[in-house]
Image 1 (spheres, rainbow, N blue to C red):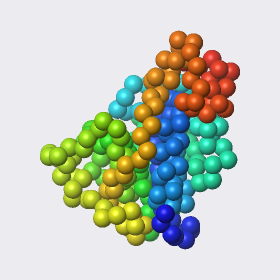
Image 2 (image 1 turned 60 degrees about the vertical axis):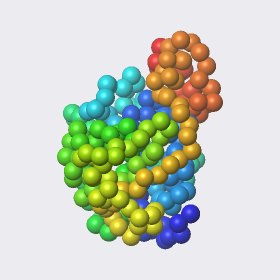
Image 3 (image 1 turned 45 degrees about the vertical axis):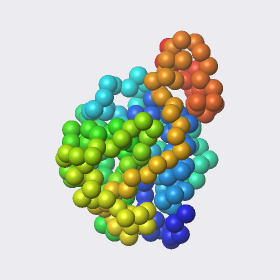
Length: 218
């Protein structure tokens, strides 16, 4: 683990639909906290994703499930900032807001999966993301980063030497990180609920109870 003063430690940003949040999300969040010594990891539900179908559960339900899942986990926070906006949720807007809140010197690390990186050029103002944050790319089982082309060039030009570099630079670097593979799918979990099967041990019991009590995914 990187040793650092918590007041200067990076802030992680982990966006997603979290429809619903599951143990794969939570284990990745914990490992990222430990490896990068984040002061906090802000898990940021997306209200209206611009690159995928609309979530099955409402933004309020997804945020409530996330808050239940991370309750009692130091450093993990549910950041609801995108839920109050009208129109599509754009990551760059959230990073701009965070940069204004945290100042120019604080390292912000945006967490992205390989699947998102492969389509990064379709993101709104994608080429500005590194102006406001570093990026940590999660290497997921079965996914491979491109070896040539615009995305490959972007990754190579901004590659970080090591994790410590993300503490000394507030933005502009890309770190590729392999985490413990937990191939849990939110779509599979939704299907289990729809079919009347148990999803126990795939997500926290508190989230299962919430889904059941509110009649989600049926």
